[in-house]
Length: 476
Image (cartoon, rainbow, N blue to C red; front, side):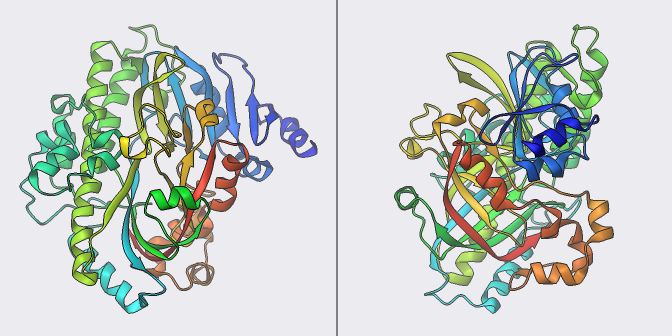
């Protein structure tokens, strides 16, 4: 208890109480309408004490119509409004900042039948593969697709991945292996601003920048053999992970509606402590419009990852003569209606992954008896995990962490990470960019992914199915 006492003693830190394994309570104070639960250990609390994560959770808990508790995941770090690694449910209030800038930033895993060991996959072969992928998938800030994809943006944002099935860019089984079947029905093209549409026009099928990536990995360890077998997973299996989002469309939409909502808060009598949490009732005209715009960005992001999958499949089949199957695609930044204890709630996940357990009625049929795969990527030099939710995670609105979580800002990383340390951490892993371009995404920038994952496993919220090791990395 000494460590907990030290945290409570710090006058700049909100008072935290350990209430169960790796679960801390932040009691109501001041304007808070809801409790806050944080899943962490002493190391993680130490890591977040110098940023604004806890204060941002307190502010989120003060919003009108918030449902108790507001959740902080082990990968939590300071964000815009709700911290990244935050989960919030409401009875009908929708918050732009609690969804975030990169709407439906998410990740998917593609599986092959290749065995890294017995099929003797060489580094030269991997280098050729990532070069082929780079030819087909533009990466970097503001990149656009040079190939004319002949896709209608209005159809993309309205119909999502099922539209790409009809156009020949997705397999018929891909939607069922995508959260929301790759399609939020509320997607509304007319709710997007002309500026957002203009920025998105040629970005479908592009990776973006920052922490977005395409990784080639192998399954290093299986923890749950029964579930892994049902999902077609085996040791040394070669897989590909794609992490990206809605690009400029989501970014511009967040900016547009943050300004609109903030200006209307007094009109609708909504208490909002700062613009980063700008929120309105979803049944207001402006709330409905944002929900439609957000859903349009969600559909765009699902289609963006699907189009990258289309190109990655081409490159992989050219190299290995094999097809890639989509295991699952999960969203990280999103707000959706879900039912808890017979009541519909609007669940906001910002840097968090939905993880429905076995037999949850909203599971895809193909994963009904296991729970769907919940994908938790590490950094480019550390392991990633395929998880599954357990019934106890109802206490987090069926959510788990979405990654390791940053330890330092990009500016701090560029100042402190040494190239020699970076090279040591990336030993044996191919990467497409020199150190000075990706130092702010170095493994040292992130928390320990094994520790982060184990916090929720020990708390009984999820379990590990498989651990993956990176072999080659394409950074945005």
